Image: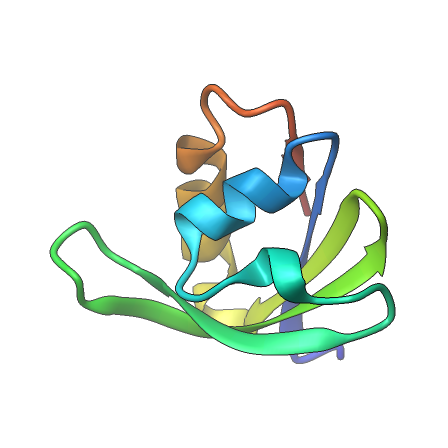
Length: 89
């Protein structure tokens, strides 16, 4: 995945953050499984398409296109306010 951006979202409210920040229901993804989804701008336009892997009960790997990885990271960190979850690259 060297040509992709990898972002980890972890913590007790990681799933709540991802359900808030992304399109679709990430909470229904079982451990070891993945879901294709998107992250949108405030106006509804698409920032990037993503694959989100649930690697553990409270840990997710968000895979973004390399050219948009920083934009996705910044958007997730901004949307993480108020959630008990850590967003790191």
